Amino acid sequence: MAVRSVRRRVAALVIAPLLAVTVASCGTADTGTRTMARALPPDATFTHPGVLVSKAQLDTVRKNVTAGKQPWLEAFLDMRDSKYGSYKYRPEPYENVDCPWGGKVAHGCVEERQDAIAAYTQALLYSVTGKQQHALKAREIMDAWSARIKRHSEEDAGLQTAWAGSTWARAAEIVRYAPGAGWPADRVARFEKMLRTAYQPLVTEKLPDYNGNWDLAMTDAAIGIAVFTNDHKAFDAALARFRDRVPAYFYLEKDGKVPLTPAGSTMNTPQKLTTYWFKQGTYKDGVAQETCRNFKHVGYSLAATAHIAETAWHQGVDLYGEVKDRLKAALAFHARYQLGENPPAWLCGGKVDRNMGPDLEVALNHLEDRLHVSVPAAHKLAEETRPAGTDDLFVSWETLTHAGNPAA
Image (tube, rainbow, N blue to C red; front, side, top):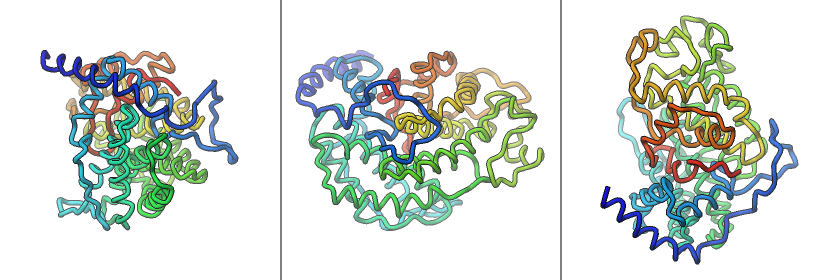
């Protein structure tokens, strides 16, 4: 702890003068009180930056880090000192990223996900510090991939494009709208084309009988890409998919004796549902479709659900309002057992796999800091695991960006 304390004090001394010459606030100011709607009007313009993180939130991050406030300073230092924050980071783009099932050899899958996280990390570092090297590095990584990637293949292509595509959209949104980042228009256009051709077709495929974390992660990427490319049709499709899948993934007793199912699903009998829910046949508030698989995949789904709703929120659409009871129930339910409470016999035969990742911050921020809804177990779990880092898939640095950050 002594070493970490010294690290914090030194960092604060270094960051404060640096921020005196930082970039101006990113994008267009989000002023006034917005009226939340169920859909974005056809003639409305998208708010930028507005993929997961807004201008107001980026401003708050910068202020918190500059002031040396915790847990944001420690979260910033962890991000800066990670391999993704290095000026020496080198992208490794592939023309074809193939991600097969069954332990077969993959090509480019880890590299793509990590390069997307590195681009997002460098974009956040630029937003906080104003150091041009970070903007250049983010652009270098994104330009390298947009110059080469053509396709994704094999069975995990949908999930791979979901994880990488969601992170690419966040990184690109920040850099595109950050004053002084200097991303040339032709490179922005090339990156847009990459997202439209190598990612969007796969993340918009309908997979109603796959485990729900797939659909939710894919929708996370789809809505981010829609905002970055200013695509109203794709944005509306992502809203519809969210509204179909989230109620079918997180159960509430008001749904009836058995869970809801997404449109097109063949899991339409109690017996099929029990199998689909990993042998869970008793349903109570907060149980999720993959609870009895493991908490890791439930965590992915919680994170993706919050990401989608947060992006929609920045565009003036309140998806949170439609699912806040499910989100609260699922957070409370899984946090209790992740913290060590013994599961009852009716739940997964009395055994759960407690392996949830850094997936709580975005949802918790909305419930606690915008709605002032208490979720004690989830709050305790988040505090015990802060600062949340990255899962090396599609969740990164969310203590920094969203903990206690209700700014629109």
